[in-house]
Picture 1: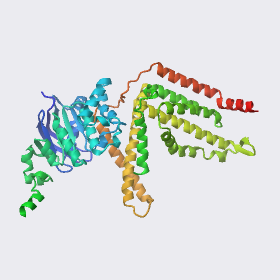
Picture 2: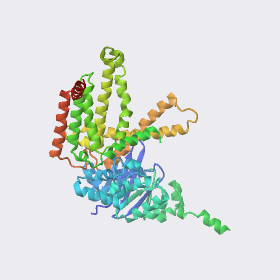
Picture 3: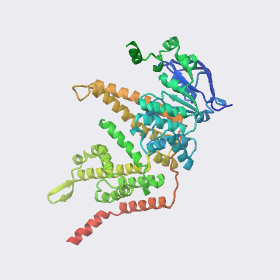
Picture 4: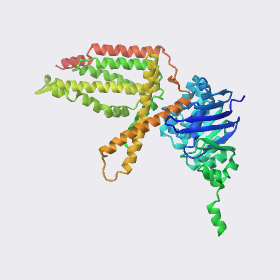
Length: 253
Length: 270
């Protein structure tokens, strides 16, 4: 079986305070697929992402990552397979220099010496951040932080790349650079986002979550044309699918 | 940016300095750690009125700052920032111990003042040595060395997190103080109730942020083991460094060289 598949079967999760995070979530993501996870705040997107890496364990249901069903025993293998890029790069970057930060995961995988150096530099080169290697992460711009936080995960060569709001707080240029970069990756990608235009650019498939349940799962463009579904999920049509106000002004004249 | 932010950036700069490539940077962290510990033990082992003997110990930070290519102004500034603690410890000595120990002309200097200055000297020496250790080694590597010396792993991991969370705490404090100052139009000082609420919020926010950082660490395979990039290896350089300094510290501890030099010079002048 491919190492790159993700399969959730009837996942339930309840937070200690009794809030239901996931309420019977099921889906199957195949090798190389790029899937957007959309939904209103509190829909369960981040909760689901944390399950994919084994940080949270479902109270009921199973999650298959590649060959195996996720349990506490194969957590380390799963964490090598699934790389998570968190929403806030400041949470992801905690080492004194960019090089150290990218090397952190590799060191935990047992990689040392020249191999470590090579893989760190390769990951930084992929995101165009080799020149930042000696810089302290807290002095980088938001776009640079985002690139480096992607490099910290890429260095570990994950089969599945999971990202939580990758374009949040990026300026338009950094956002389009990020989209170009992500398009070059051949990983299985799962991207939780409110940015539906980014979802159109990167993901051919979208899963819509609402109150911890999957309410729709299908081709991105088709789902985003369903006004009723978008309204129920507190979403809006992506900008490029809305009637452009400037164009309509010109046409009216 | 307010002072809190500036200072936290400055602490982080020590880790950046540790990326240097001087002879001292390349030494095994264990050698630097044990040498620093011997230095500190030697400095604090003097009696409370020791003054001249302590001055000889300044050779250690001076040599390391010069040859380790560390910015001396930055080091001095850092020591000055934490110096109020030492002043607080020794400030009552002149009041408690009024017995005159030294007579310079008609001015008698009491034991309290001498012990106070001695505390300041020791403080400067030990704190500078600790800052130099981190600036030449990096805090992670220092923690790695502690584990190699058999310090219990949970203790070292706590230490590592404590150090990392200083940045988280200062970061959150800075944000909250900034948000507060934007809405405090007339008064510079905040009221007691606001202050209490601020501290409570700060604690909750810091815990939350720390949890998210820990989560990111776990997701990249952190299992409580500290791993460092530079391999630890004891070679003749480390042995020469440690034993050389240790010998000098013991020598300076047993013989008051500045006093002997002073006696020699004044005797010669007479």
